[in-house]
Image (cartoon, rainbow, N blue to C red; front, side):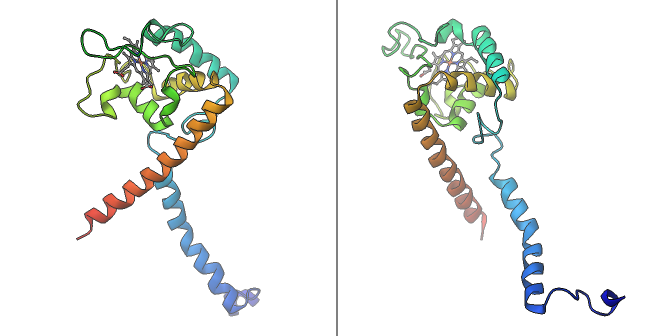
Length: 184
Ligand code: HEC
């Protein structure tokens, strides 16, 4: 009955303001956290937004063999003379191991290029890399990329992890800018 007379008998007023103030903030924090979660899963443990198990990576390897090896090589070695432009003016398929430049791209870019093709991150760019949106699910793409990443030595993994960090802050900044732009 004590509680009927005083709304909150155990917490002094100044603390109550703190507690309620924080409680009022919670939805805001939750929304911010949701907004931070990248729609394309560009961060997180393992590969983009997904913790990867050994089985996921083994599955990724099978999917790689079926979908990517014909161009990027059974051992991720890429096409011969991959640094030399083809007569068509386009580039051959580069290796996905540490000798290539796959690790020069953030998770978000790798995911986008695999799903939609290279022109999705470089508008107007002509490329023989097909987008796999119709053939693979997002999860399958993530598993393949996790397999590719699992073959890199520590140095390449660490360098790519740093790219992911700067990509994340760039995405946040871009979002802030676009929010500002919408304001009158
Ligand atoms: C028909 C051949 C072909 C297949 C199949 C193919 N790729 Fe590619 N891929 C290419 C070519 C060619 C490039 C180089 C594009 C360019 O720079 O113009 C490329 C580039 C890429 C890149 C960018 C690499 C970089 O360092 O810039 C990624 C990532 C990639 N491929 C992932 C994949 C994945 C994952 C698969 C399988 C799901 C796959 N590719 C299947 C031909 C192919």
